[in-house]
Every structure is written in C-alpha cells, then in structure tokens.
Length: 485
Image (cartoon, rainbow, N blue to C red; front, side, top):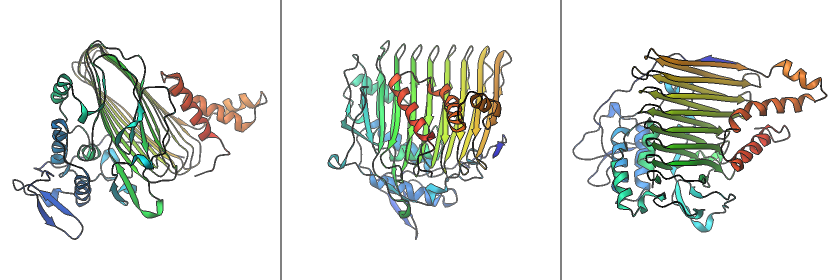
C-alpha cells in the first residue's frame, strides 16, 4: 500500500495575448502535424501555444455548426481566447501531480457527431422527470419532462423563447473559471442545458439529468470519441430544486471521453440539492467541473458516488458570496480495477457566519488503483464566525493500492470554528474478529464492513429510488464472483 500527502506548492502558466478560433476570416499557418487558425488582428505566439491543444481546438471547431445564440457565442469566444495560451497539464503541474492524463493525450481525439435516433437503443427506467443527454446532445425523444411549476424551464438554451429568461441568461458571465478542460468544454459544447427556477418557486420532484455514452471505440484502435455536455442552473431568490446527474455507458469496455461542466447559481435564500452518480466504462475518461456560486442564506448540498472510468476527475469549486450560507459536500469514490479516482475541491468563504461541512471517503480495491483527494477550504478575513469541517477517510484493500490526500484549511479570519482530519487504513482486525466470533465467514464480514464504510455517503441521497439503485450497484461491484479487471 502506498500513501502520500501533497505539498502546498503551486505552478502558474505565463499569461499572453491569445487568438480566436473564429470560423470567419481565418488564416491558416501550416505545420506537418497541426494547423493554427487565427484572425488577422492577432499573431499566435508559438512558444505559448501547445500544439496538441491547438489540434484539439481545431478539430472541435470544425465539428460544430455555427450558432445564432448570443450566450453560446460568448461562451465559445471567451473560451477560445484563453484556450490557445493554455498548455496541456503534466505531472509537473501541482494540480495534476498525481493525475496522469497521458491516457487521453496518447489517444486520437474524435468529436462525436449528433447521434441518429434509429441507432439508439436506450430506455428510460425511472419515474422521475428526466432529460436525456446522449454523447453531449440533448435528446427530447428519450426524455420525459413532466409538467413543472409556472416559470420553470428545463431544456436547450438554443430553444428558450422567454425574453425574461434570455435576459437573465445574458446577464450571466460565461467566464473562464477553470482549467484547460473547462475551456475545451466551452469551445466544444454543442448546446447548454438550462435549468431555470424563478423567484420563490419550489420544484417538488427531483430532476434527473441522464448522460448516456453510446459512441465508443475498442481499446486497440487508440480512438477516443469526445463529448462536451454543459449545464447552467439558475435558481432565483427563495427557489428550491433537487437535481440528479447520472453518467452511464452502455458497454463497460468501450473507450470514450466525457468532458462535462455544470455551473450553478443559488440565489438568496434558495436551496439546491445536487446528486452526482458516475458509472461510466472502465476504459473511459471522465473529467467534470462543477462551479457553484451561493448568495446569502442559501444552501447547496452535494452528494456524489463515483465508481467508473479509467481516469475520473471531478473539480468542484464553491464560492460563498453572502453571509449565513450553508454548504454540505459528501463524496464517495471507489476503484475496483486499474483506475484513477480524483477529487479536487475548493470552498471559498468570504462572509460572516458561513457553514461548510465536507466528508470524502474512498476505497481502493485493486493493486493498480489510485485515489486522489485535494480539498481546500479558504476562510478569508471577513468570514468571521465561520463553522467549517473537513474529513477524508480512505480504505486500501490490496497491496500497492495508492491514495494521495491533501486536506487543507487556509484561515485568515480569527473568530472561527474549523477542523479537518485524514485517516488511511485497511479494515480493522478487531471488527473482522467481531463478525467471525458470531459465525460470519470472513468474506461476508469484509463485504459488510466495506459497504457500511460507503453507506455513510450513500444514505445521504435524498431520493429513495436513487439511493437504492446506488446501493445495488456498489454491492454488485463488491461481489467477488464478478470478473476481475
């Protein structure tokens, strides 16, 4: 077993003027391996442009039709302007020190085209209001959106017909809040799923956003079909909604790359419950950004279970921008094969009487499996009377299984109650002995203890049907009779 703590050092990228990927009036600068598209007003600076990133950007641009949507145009332009001066991350960059992205870089990236309805074999197996996103594209025919309260909108940003909602979306700033993968999503997303809840409206039934990966390649082909789903959630003052994101893949051996972004704005006194389930192919890459802005007296609750993907990374950034704000994060990751499960979280508290509670648990049950946790809670000068807690616990069940953890509190305010802790271990022998002394065989005892370790997070899913589905899935993964990977 291997474990380590990350050192608090950071690397920065040089800033420079960048170029736009506009399809109009572009100039092509030829290179044996790639092309750079620029507008006449800018000159690309080759020393600050990563050839591989430029190649992906060009491929994405050529795969998308032009759009008349002003918000989507702004998103693509702002993303492309920053993207061209952003290099591909390496192990030398502190945020990726223990996360190897060469699996993606060594593949042939192929943006996925809109799926054909005749080729889809997908069923909707839930009674919840559901919006289906297949390979990054909204599929109305596979969705079942029941009637929502007046003023609520769930669907494509390109098809919004309410002037009031369009005005609200246009006021939102689609800025570059994340890393390279955030920017690639901004350039490559074909549409934006918009979830809008007006002031004072409470949506009773959970909304299921079901992301289905259909397109995939064989491992030997080196091709990596690439999708960029994106969601914007706007919940106005006093509004409430529960959202479930579920990522699934049909064939557990197929290779593909899902690069997802969700932005959430929680208005004053509003409440958002966000459940996130990641169960994609064991040969897939899954990279996700969740960015949350909470206004005063609002509450954001996040419950996450991630078990799929050869490379799975979730970046979650939460900004409390008002007093008396509550944030709760509960996450569980599990590696049962040659996987990397990575969670990078950052909570920024800037106002008085903020509350944040975070628990992260992971299980590495394979000798080549690796888990990464980098959790940062930043309590700034004016965030007096803050109550912030952070705990990470990891189980390493095989020799050479690895976990790298960095729980991190940065406190500038002087009137706070803050705590953090980390624990890494195998199952405790006295717990196993307790079961064995009561006639329970060793394998059953281990499964019970492992599942109870996960249950602390799983039990927090607010919807009973989702909770039951996740419990069943985890039990199946822990079944010793299932084929090893």
